[in-house]
Length: 134
Image (cartoon, rainbow, N blue to C red; front, side):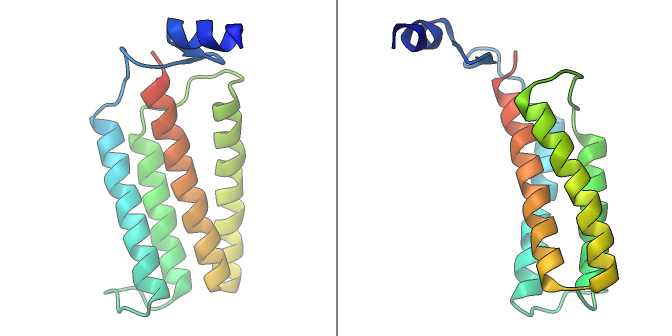
């Protein structure tokens, strides 16, 4: 318990910096807006709301892939390293690629939903990491 208390008092907990030097940027804002668009597309598609130029789940998956690529391109990026968050993001990025291929082949709501969740979790990991790193 002493180690945890001392770690929290120093602003560092399990190697994660908290507090004074949070580094969220305009790039994090742009990825947040894309995450909101991703969430909006998910709700529109699953609730049966007509989305212009989106005729089905395959087209929705292509749009999600486009949003994901834009989020990745506008992200401040991950530094190389072996952080748990970096490794989790790498695994989820690979999963997103597999889900895009699977979704384009099958065109199912399941693939669309799983890709949406994967993209949003990647966004959350990235934003959380930028929030806590110095």
